[in-house]
Length: 382
Image 1: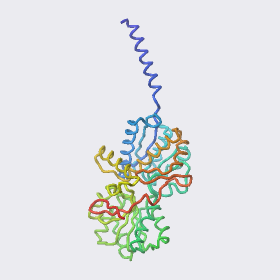
Image 2: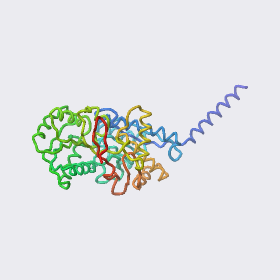
Image 3: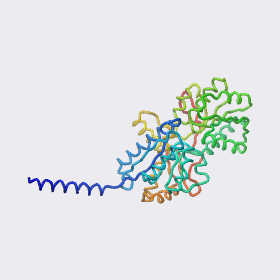
Image 4: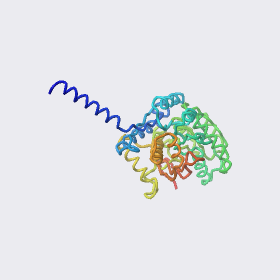
């Protein structure tokens, strides 16, 4: 064939390829900020793994509205300042239509002003009630709020005859928010707080605070924090020979806590948790059973490690966004936000979500069960 004819065919092929590329659907780009490294990596690593797994499975299933989904993940290294830098990149450089995360309450609260200014929906994976109370137009979250967790603990404690508790809380955003709720809700639950101790989230020894608590007439201890502090407290409590029952928050509801504390030190600890960590004990007919079993199977097959409650928060955040985009038939941020706010009766790994103009968490105390750590595993209590 003449060289000019070959050159012509190549040119036509390039033009055809370009046309095909142009015709391909643009991805729906969702941002994610997680604490993949740093002290809260036990939260962020399963969250990162989960959203990338979902990206793959959603795209294998044809995407959303016929478009692929691209999830851009940044690691804030458990640093609120780096979370702010990450959200700037997602909003200005990556041009995402929504954001999920961050993993921690402090980082979430740090990025809220950027989210509100940009008018991009955020579905946080952090627990503090103040993230959504008062309601912020563009901010939603998937974990059960600390207020619901405190109510669940106090109900269970009161039912077991406990009227006096000592509290020990971390001095970070999550711990401070929990301390606020523990103090605010005690009287209504018929419970008196007889000791109020605080620790630094990076402290490695809490024997001073626990020794003070040991000298009170507290019938139970309630600890509020995320690893590694609660694991240190579990160990120190045993070292000091304290037999007083120990309650933890849902911030330790992962196998990592048992690993850090040691199964013997964690034995008998009580906490409110979502049903994900005790899925084998969830009745077959429960509306969450199918999604819990499916997520566990997919995650553990792919990553060869157990799921955690925190990965479930990210799972729910992405799937709620997908639901909103499908309902709105649009990936425009304002349409996604409006559709999120109208989601009702959506069963996910954390519970049944019912969002509204007045409730951007959408969960009730029913999203919690009380569990006890027994022989290194989770035992759902009745």
